[in-house]
Image 1: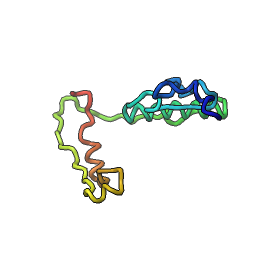
Image 2 (image 1 turned 135 degrees about the horizontal axis):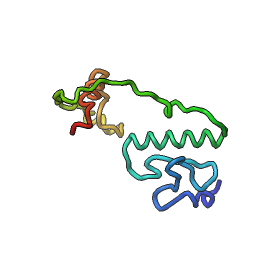
Image 3 (image 1 turned 120 degrees about the vertical axis):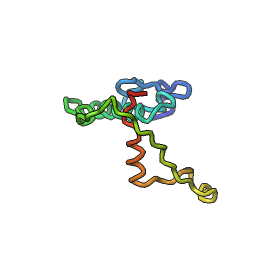
Image 4 (image 1 turned 30 degrees about the vertical axis):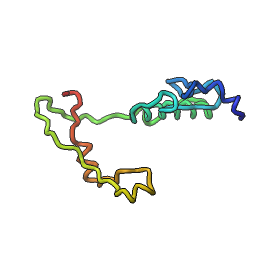
Length: 129
């Protein structure tokens, strides 16, 4: 395709795409996430990717089928709304040395599995604050 054929999908700095499907005005071109909405959260990016994946699949192979992310059932979790929240400090991410930063775009090192589990469990009660 030539650049002019992509022109209907381009809007200033972003791509024009349907928020429900990721379809652009260019047949067969789909987009989602930051390139459509501008900066957003990781969750919004994942949701846009799921919508676009479904639309792309339907575009390539029309027909009824289930997508695992649409039928995912979350387990029941007992939450005691009266219980006090243990406030834990965030995990400190180890930083690369200045010399190491010259060969990488990353600044932080990876945390351990145990640190990731601890970080994920710091507060699962977002409804309380």
